[in-house]
Image 1 (tube, rainbow, N blue to C red):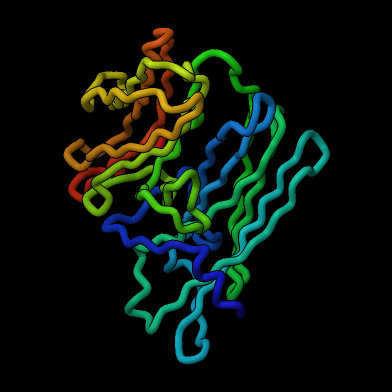
Image 2 (image 1 turned 120 degrees about the vertical axis):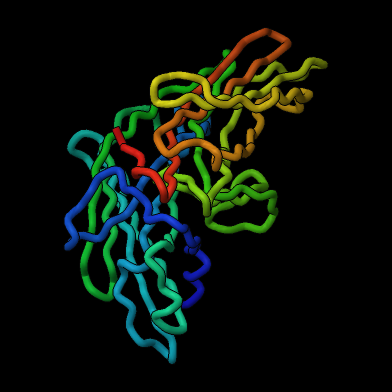
Amino acid sequence: MNRSCALWIYVIGLSFAPAFAHPQPDSVLHFALDYARFRINANTAQVELYLAVPRAQLRFVADAGELLGAFEAQVSIALGDSEVVNHSWGAHTLAKDTSEIKRSQLLYTQAAFQLPSNNYRVRVRVRDKNSGVFGMQTFEVPVEPFENERLALSDIEISSRTTRDTTWSLFYKNRYTVIPNPNATFGMALPMLYIYSEIYNLTYPSDSSYSVVYRIFDGQGNQVKSLPVRRRPIMGKQLVEVGACNVVSLPGGSYYLEVRVTDHATQQVAFLRRKFFVYREDETRPSEQ
């Protein structure tokens, strides 16, 4: 096996067992799945798919004095009855012994596809290469045309970690390394919620500025937290928005993060909300409803 593919997988240890949006039988390989859409041009989006596979679900086999676990991910994207994308890739993880393999660890990977505006049916299949056990999820992804003039935002990618970086990796984009969190769940081991988004159609060139504010709402729509407004000069028509919010003090449950942007040259406002969960070991696991 080509061990270079280990660079395409990220292991993070959590103190909680993640909740998956679509419960599956024990005989099926579980995985979390999410996606985000970013602008390529007015009629084309880059659709990124994010996967998280619990490391302990994989079957590990002896390999050159170590233990090797491996899986294959396959993405099929269809438009009506026609398949427009069929892409597979593999990833693996190594352990010195079984004590290094913990139930709380997740293996992250992702893939990106450029899709014209339309409604797509996406099927993602993840298969354990050693046991043959697999899991599959199917869902719809609408790709709508992007605004050409009015202030707009991409989807919000909820991440486990976002760091400034110029080193290319699977998780690199626009000078940042963005480690996804497909089940959007946080807790004591992941107290910081990181976001990555893109702002489109700012007034540029301009001597004016724009501002960004993050607000958090509970499942009933009540605001429970707000971060200070950040105001910056407009350095381009399209800019990256990255940020973080400490959510460890929130009670367990479901929440919505709102990212609100104001272009002060035109007074246009754009905002989006993104659902996330806080899980506390001393409380009930957050509901996905």
